[in-house]
Every structure is written in structure tokens, then in C-alpha cells.
Image (cartoon, rainbow, N blue to C red):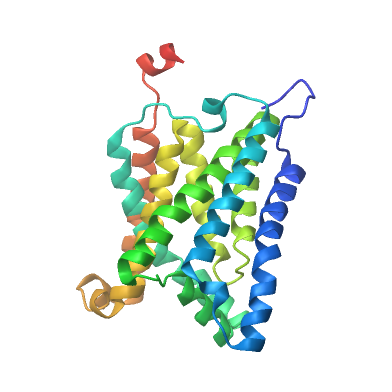
Length: 273
């Protein structure tokens, strides 16, 4: 936490500005194409080449802009200290069990604010690929985690942790991460993921692990959407809901303990730092 009163990039407001700039750059192209598609019944907005060019171009610019504004070295914005590979196991089990538990707040939200049909069409499009399952996997499990983690757990979180307390840095970056997705019906899931990845990032100081965790989460969602008819017939999901939630809670708590344990710094690590 910064105790000198000096402000480093980005503060919360500067992080919001960075994300608005990112969205604005993409909207400069997306909005005109959406209008053309609407009036001419074309599909320029979803053309693979357009998505690649715009996605790469806007992301590279935002990463370059954020890095230059930070004024620090590359390894401080995107740290890559060593971590215990065993931590990946409890990350997987936590994300699986947490997704089971998220059914509770999701149902409560659906009663208060039922999602419209167009939302589910848009949500399913996110997990659809131009080349079938593997195209979707590349988009949601490889590209999205790399891009979003470099921005949120890289540029944004590394700046926030220099300005605020660890709790504030994690909370603010997770909230911005959830709001960035512009999806009120999935805000619980994205906020939870942001909290977990922010905590792991501050514990391990490794951007690669945050990317791996994000990729695991998106892969679990993709698999559940693709193979839910098979998954729901497995013995675990045939149990009654209270028992599923009980076991999922136990797995969640135990997984958090293991993540904490496997992310503890050894004396060797501390002396090297």
C-alpha cells in the first residue's frame, strides 16, 4: 500500500477510464457494422477476420497504453515469480464447487430480474466458435483469459496494490472485472472469479497462474454448456439439491485452505525477493 501520498497508475478512476477507452475503441468499429448488419441483413459484425483484427489491435493498444502510463518495469506490471504447481488442483476444485453454489444467488436474481430471451442468445454466442467446439475453446479458454488477465490482474491490479490496501485492490479490481462484462445476470460469477484471481495474484505474484485459473473457469463453463445433458446424469448431480450444496460448500472451504497453503512463500522464496 502506498503510504507516501503519491499516486501510481492506475488509481480506481484511472482504471475506469482505461476500460471505457478499451470499450470505446471497439465500439468505433462495432457500432457501424451492427447498423449495416441490421439494415442490410449481413453479418460483418461477427466476421472472424474483423473480430481478430479488432480484438488484437484494441488489446495491444490498451496494454501498451497502460504499461507506458504505469512507468514501471515489465516484470512489475506482469510479475512471474515461481509458484507451486500443486496449487492448480485446488483452483480446479474450488471453481467447480463454487459454480455449483452460484446456482443459489443466480436463482434469487432471476426471480427479481428475469433475464430476457435476447440475453441467453447473446450469452450462448460468447461460447460459440467459428470452428465448432475447438474454436469456442480457443476464444473463451485461451484468448479471453490472456487478454483479460493482462489487463485486470496485470495493469489494473498491480497499480491498485501500490495505491491501496490489498483488500481494496482485490475488491476494486474484481468489481471492475465484473462490471466490464456488462452482464448483470452473471455478475456474481465474474465478481467471485475476480476476487479469487486477485487473491491468488497477490499471494503468488504470478500473472501466468491468474491466466491458468481464468482459463480453467471458462473451460468448466464451456464444458457444462456443451455436455450438460451428460453431466446432469452423473451420480453427483442426481443427488438432491441440499446435499449437492453441502458437499460443494465443503469442497470450496477445503480448496481455499489448500490454495492458501500452496501459495505460502518459503524461506528460499522470501530471501530471493
